[in-house]
Image (cartoon, rainbow, N blue to C red; front, side, top):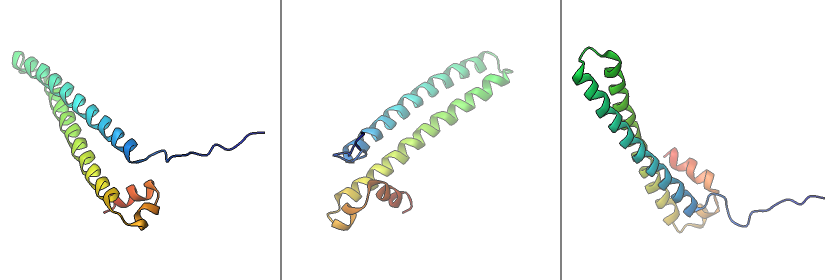
Length: 109
């Protein structure tokens, strides 16, 4: 006969969410560095051959990727700040809500 496994701690607690956010920030930083490196590569190709339309398009795509990684960093930091404000409240009403409900409230504020 099987027994139901009951978690002793919530799956997504405050520390776990911070760890996930840190990983997102690290990944975004690495993506940005790689995109800028590729942008430099394609820019050199365009400088060598100004008629290379494919390299021009790829150069622009690399800039878009670098910008989107920066945007993701800003969004993550914004969520971390809002998350910190939610967890810093000492209201029992807030602590009774599940973490998913709290994150949903943060996203819709």
